[in-house]
Length: 224
Ligand SMILES: Nc1ncnc2c1ncn2[C@@H]1O[C@H](COP(=O)(O)OP(=O)(O)O)[C@@H](O)[C@H]1O
Ligand SMILES: [Mg+2]
Image (cartoon, rainbow, N blue to C red):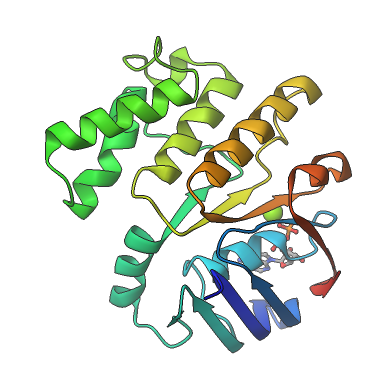
């Protein structure tokens, strides 16, 4: 079963009297252990596509099926549960909770879902942070971490609930080239070792070789 199937998705935004078409006839299938790079210039609809795939936005038209669940007509409440259980997000602006430590930023995911015991969640958070090279930083709050370290905490948080689909928005945009490559390698290793699918948004063509496949997006249209 594919991790993600977008079929003829259209998304429009209202801006005053104007209608902005952010996505038009967007059709995309991501296999259950596939990493797809979505590459396009600023304003081409990348974040909109990720937001729709992750149930943060609903499409104006078309269907969105994630791991076999058709979320196109889900209610807000159903979408909240879906987001918690089925997807992991790494946003463009790394939005860690500023007053929580790295470990707590991972564990808070568990608290929302209330899925594991505190002890099991703590062990999982520490194992993930260790894999991400952050074992010395678990007790630091985001303000005490570098940009690359914060990005890695966000990756750990996205993997905390073992999602089948990870959605990552421009993970390297705030990092220099070398650090960007390290972060991409980490993401790919983490995603591959879990047999999880991922869509990684980037405007940097150099990052596409980390993915199994690249899809280009221009003005809301997808092309292989
Ligand atoms: N909330 C919004 N309201 C109005 N227009 C929006 C909104 N979000 C995005 N857009 C517009 O939709 C288009 C696609 O945006 P976006 O998906 O953020 O592109 P990208 O992530 O590729 O930069 C752009 O023209 C952008 O200005
Ligand atoms: Mg964007």
